[in-house]
Every structure is written in C-alpha cells, then in structure tokens.
Length: 55
View (cartoon, rainbow, N blue to C red):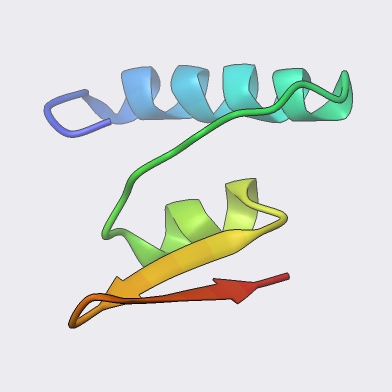
C-alpha cells in the first residue's frame, strides 16, 4: 500500500478484509504493524534466516 493516499489505503484495506471474510487466502508482505495486526490471521516472520509462524 506504499504510495497510496489515505483513500487508497482505506479502499485497499476494505477490499482485503472483504476477501478475508469470504475465506480467501491472501499473502501480504508488510513492515507496517497496523496492516499486519488488522489484516492477518497468521503471521510468518523472518529474522536472520529463521522463520517464525505466529497465529
């Protein structure tokens, strides 16, 4: 969502949340904690080559 204005970010979040509500699988890569907290059920984090999965 980098480079989007406030309305674009809101529209994209709404779209992703509606797809999530339909049971769709979405892969999202972000460093923005708010996006991760609001949009993700499962978070995979890579730190120094080690993958950690959080549900």
